Amino acid sequence: MLGHVVSDRGIEVDKAKVELISKISPLTSVRQIRSLLGHAGFYRQFIKDFSKKIHPLCNLLAKDTPFVFDESCLEIFQALKDVLTKALIIQPSD
Image 1: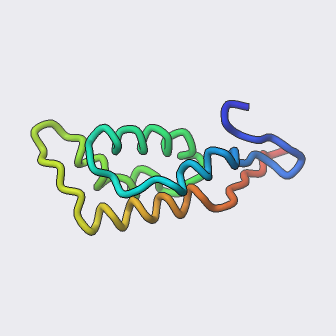
Image 2: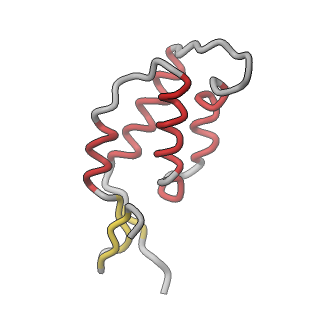
């Protein structure tokens, strides 16, 4: 259902999309950041404090801001990849 797998265990992320995320290399352009954030935004319900975690990456999207993918952005990128590639399951309420 819309990129999620619904089963008796709960709602999970589609494994094919997880594999795609795990193969992403560090980002080199604003277009790649937008693509990653768009894809990650689809799974924001699975990630606690999602907007706080990606805020430095969003700053790179601001108008007239030079694209500097520094060490802090790389750490956030790796942390986001780690969170998105874990076995995420949400149990719906009764």
